[in-house]
Figure 1 (spheres, chains in turn brown, orange):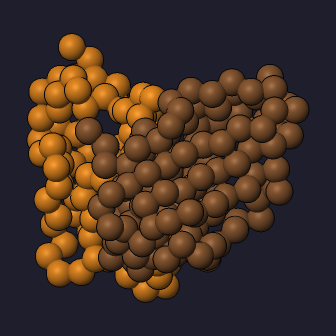
Figure 2 (figure 1 turned 90 degrees about the vertical axis):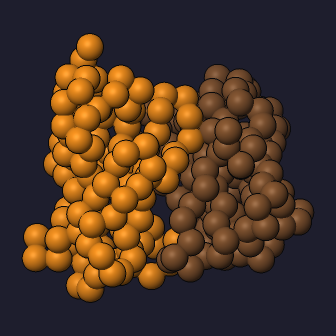
Figure 3 (figure 1 turned 180 degrees about the vertical axis):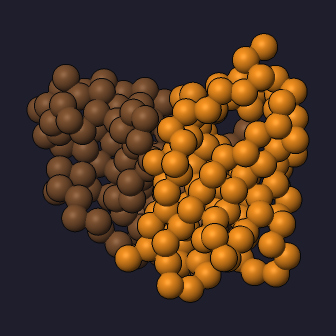
Length: 114
Length: 113
C-alpha cells in the first residue's frame, strides 16, 4: 500500500472542463511534488512545494495551477487542457527537499483529455 | 549538467536467472543515486539509494546496487529474478536536492517463465 494517496485514479475531461487532482500524505513530509509522466517515458518534474510554499515551477503552462492548502494536501487544478496533456500525473512527497530524502510516490492519476 | 543514462531500453530474462540493469551518470562530483521500480499503472517505489560509505547497497525485494566511481556507474543486480519483478526500472541522480533529481529513460524488464 502506498502512503501517498492520489484521487481520482482515472479522469477523462474535455478541453473546456475544470477539474482537480488531489494528493494526500500523512507521513509528516514537508516537501511535495507534482510530476507528469507520458507513456514509456520517465517522470518530469512540474512543481515543488516546500513547507507549503511553491518552491519550483518548471515552466509549466498556466492551465495547470497547483495549490498546497496544508502540509498534508496537494492539489493540481486543471483548466482548458489540451489533448497532449493526457498523461499519468504523479504526486510525491519527501521529508524535505534535501537530497538525502527519498521521494515517496502515489499511484498517480491517469488523465485523458478529449 | 548532470545526466543519467540507462543504455538498455528493454531486457528479457528467464525466471530464476540473474539480472543486471545498467546505469551511468555524468556529474563532476559524487551525486546521490537511486533506483526506483514502477509496475504497470502504479507509481514509483524506491528500491535503494546511495549517498556515501559502502559502495555495495542493499535494497528491498532482494535487489542490490554497486557504485563504481571509476566507471561512473550504479548498476542494479538481483541474483534470481521472480516473475513479479517484471516492471519498469528507473535510475535517478540528485546532485544537490530533489529539485535537481534527474531520471534515466528507464529499462523495461520482461521475465520469461
